[in-house]
Length: 250
Ligand code: 13P
Image (tube, rainbow, N blue to C red):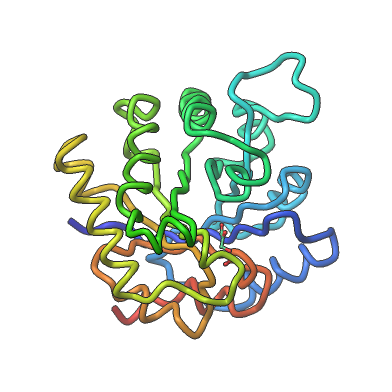
């Protein structure tokens, strides 16, 4: 099964109009591997602005959405709004939403269902924290988070990318090793094969996220079950282009 490599830059709450211009200029001036699907998850307030300047082969994502299309939800944005301003994707369930904003599996599942119903594609994030890792619970935690999403995803697995983001590797400068990443991604596929079906297990793309840099991307990209990256801080730097191109010779 060949799965298209997909690299998403998650700017988180970073970037202003000036920095945005610099990042996009960098992306347009350097050669990008045409075999890689590229997504930028930018602060939603800038989606319409960035849409006017990104190259045709770069899609945009929102970093969150609410669970319904409209209504009295001050400060929230919906799937149809995200589509309306030109983004195709939304990231749901990243650790910051789970930890800081106390989003639980049920809310994340409801958001995933809403996003898919709205015609968006979803990058659904899972990952264990340091304590859970130390207790040997990585597989259990990650598969429980995925299990909660299965009914919400239904038959829409082709519109979903899973992102394995161990909390202990996010923003720490300490990436999981290629062996650790491969082990977890293979375990996810095995769980999907048993609990969803073998087609989904073979075809779903699983990104790795957590301190991905130009220095470790090629080695991580070489793992059999790594189908791309969800990149945080390095996506704001010129090295993001090297991360996009990291699977070129594999
Ligand atoms: P860093 O690449 O900054 O560790 O962030 C990873 C992440 O959370 C991407 O969503």
